[in-house]
Image (cartoon, rainbow, N blue to C red; front, top):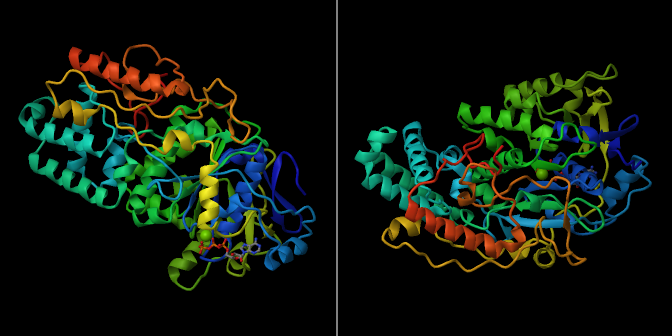
Length: 522
Ligand SMILES: Nc1ncnc2c1ncn2[C@@H]1O[C@H](COP(=O)(O)OP(=O)(O)OP(=O)(O)O)[C@@H](O)[C@H]1O
Ligand SMILES: [Mg+2]
């Protein structure tokens, strides 16, 4: 049942497959709690990894970490394999890399304030329009004055500066009320209390580190620890959205590749849209649409299809619908919406079957040859090969310490940025930050040790400059070797000092679709 150009999903009246060439046409996994969504997601993620496609998944309950351990012949899995005649079912494990915004359950994931940009930051901070306006002014001022915004203390220092010069800046940029700045400062404090302080800073996540291929040819499975993150749902949603926009900004156009370059699973996807302003929903829709031609597939996982706005929903071509309950009118509406999105099967009523599905059984419709949705099939989902359920703390530690990316991320970097520049205006020279240990990177020349995954050479992002100062000037940013991170930091400091002396960037920074800094100038 295992074929090269497709992922085996389960069996209806026939085996059901997801075609790899349509893996970037996005997908949706829905169903009530406990119906089998996570197991389905794991099965798909295993299939992509096996096919050499790196995947990124948010692990909301901690159970997807199990992909890093060989599965067992548990009764319910053996029974399912038998039931569907899945004779080549074997136990296995996958090349997992753990990430964690809080840096505890995996390598720390960071982004700089500059990279995040005012739109997403406003969303994380839950700012109103006026407050967002002030934040925009602050960013514009920072861009115009080449102030590097790396972490929260940079942003705070920037806001203090903007506040102290509010009259002058109001004349140039529009009204900057000091009371509004105070409100933004308070929102920052709340964010810090949620433990987000560590998230902003360097080394910022390199998208290429999510696109590694293990020595056995399998795609890396990046697992984001999201259990604790769920207590800061806004941070969670915004971070994943930021990642999506980074993928869009950095990856080259590939059209419709034979298999995706990366597949991104977004669990608890409703959080992305809960109370989201229309402008943000529009951006999500836009990014999801555009990222497809970069070879990136996005799979949303949520309880109800109605959690996802229609414009986004209509782009999710590969569908797995587990059981839904239909007790309340809202439930019934959800069942109807879910049923209506499928291409009907004359053998059964989609709406009726949705409420009758057993655990681990689902309605499946995927794109078939020609790019048309297949007739919906009532499908028993295959058992995964890796462990179903979490890793122990020891197992997790072992995976983390054997990881190919740890060296670069585990120690934070604090180089000269807005905080230092604004705090010590008379100081023209800064002390260079301690250089980070060299990281495994796509540009590394030396052969990597055999235990470490190779980054996939194909999708190497263009012109990743890594830090805002490198984006000055008129030409494309230099292709710099990240292997010589040491150089890049020193170089950045030198540029930063030079800029402090000479005043302004010759050209303002380029912000991308979500207001994040773009990594490649086109
Ligand atoms: N394909 C399957 N084959 C055999 N058993 C399954 C299958 N899918 C799910 N199960 C059983 O159902 C349990 C719950 O599945 P799962 O954790 O995937 O549900 P879920 O929909 O993700 O729930 P929640 O919304 O609570 O996260 C599994 O632990 C397993 O025992
Ligand atoms: Mg689940």
